[in-house]
Image (cartoon, rainbow, N blue to C red):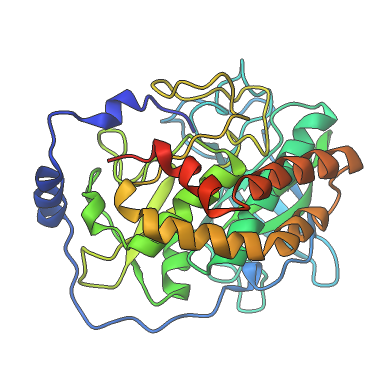
Length: 358
């Protein structure tokens, strides 16, 4: 998802205005929540296999289009067949001139049973290949690896479940078989952490962010070279924030954690359609630019030190991504290696932080 960052700069808004606005529209009540275990779909990293049938080839890409009926057939040791409704989602990848195969939303039209892998799921984002060429399937796998990298840093992150998906028409005619992945719902991310998703504001103040979490977010996005996000703002009419979501303790509008998603515009993935957002002057998405807040620089230095100590672990996560080609593994390892070399000394970390946002 890509938007214009100039629209989020909001020069007419001060931090105080942001704070007043967000405090006026975010409201929660009740005691602190107990942490929930992950739902069955996200309790394992084992690759699943299923068939998704429906009028996928001709599905409408209009934002207000009604979902179309489909069927999800899970194979393996516990097969099941579930009726679903399918619709397209996203912004850039929804456009046919960008992606011949659209990203999908899968809605369960009947409540999955108690023994179902999809127990507790209502609707899920399915991250799909953009085009038929093998490179685009590799892009999906690299984006999946980005989620796994962030999972390793914190449970306050979207989990992802990799799947080999056979797409067919209503009459069973084969359309494509490609890897994709389901993305965990943000409400489930919050429940796993004993938190609540915060809704109702499209802007907050940076002072409302939990400093360590904000620094972790910013350094991670720098590591994978993703510029397509915001921690404190979103387009008008949408919940904060752009390509991220806010969670926090119930009743609280401070110490908020921003949970990132949508990593296809990162340099790690390097999708053919990915370009730097408007207002950020870099030649391409492989060029890193730190965009964390300067007030969190102390915490960012601590995050960088932690990541440097976990270099082998981070590289191993990418190396162990299922079905990633040897060339994709090597290229990703080199790219992440450049980051670790860059933060290998305190002086180099200081250089990274020079472009922080005030």
